[in-house]
Image (cartoon, rainbow, N blue to C red; front, side, top):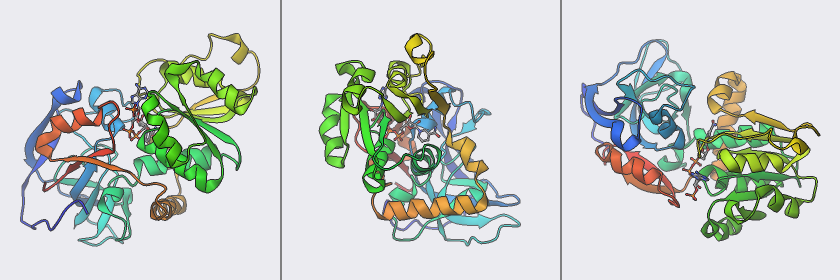
Length: 345
Ligand SMILES: NC(=O)c1ccc[n+]([C@@H]2O[C@H](COP(=O)([O-])OP(=O)(O)OC[C@H]3O[C@@H](n4cnc5c(N)ncnc54)[C@H](OP(=O)(O)O)[C@@H]3O)[C@@H](O)[C@H]2O)c1
């Protein structure tokens, strides 16, 4: 567990991270004392225990997260684990003191308390540790929706993925072993290769050691891969597009380089076949799930966490006051484990 007992007290002011303006995370994030928010109709107040520093939080801070508009000074933090602290009118099915995973679509989990719609909480069984519940939705739900639902990668097929050493990439490698498809993994540093092979990667290539499309075809054969997922874009995404089979489909789900992906500069790949490049954003898909699909997604995540497949490796922990160090650590090249802000630390 990340935390021991947290003394209950009547609090009216809390510490929260606020974004003064868009810019570099180490420069524009401040710790402020702000009023503890009150839950309105259908809302729940959560006492936050721990909250990850995810790439999406940092994209938002820099002003590149188009799905959520910041109103300054803006709250920050999309994911986390906490304890139900107060229920607004009309909330059923949750009890005070219950531990939940908290998705905060508007941001605001980098704080002692957050208020969110009751529907954005996932109660999680007690035996799943806090650090896993803190990262219960963003990466695990994306893995299930991309790989099982949208691509539905069949047994025996190759799935090509970039940033394969990321927490999400490692989940995909473990899921592939379980579900019976094969992973072809792209990393930017040779030092990452051995760990991914040990995890069960079927093949690992290094983006700086030759054109990705040529490396891919030498492994899967001249027709290329039918399934791919890419959060890197730029030159990596461009070369992955060229590695696609004529019926291939690639989900682009991140922007780690912030550079353009090109599909039109080589006619061999646009005047032949039917290659599909499609955006994946969890914020688009989650609200489109039916209640039954959402419940099923939560149950699938719990089951795959119990098997260790959708596991997040915990990295360094910081307090809210250490936010500058936390965001710098989160973007260190070769960092091991997910950085967490831990409340009450
Ligand atoms: N679209 C969605 O809804 C959605 C949902 C969840 C996650 N995501 C995206 O999924 C990606 C992975 O998230 P995570 O939490 O698993 O990340 P993470 O654990 O923080 O890992 C980041 C990985 O990206 C690699 N990387 C960073 N910058 C890179 C660059 N310029 N070129 C190539 N590789 C680079 C790092 O490689 P090193 O090991 O070499 O440092 C590291 O392996 C992020 O882009 C995130 O935004 C998107």
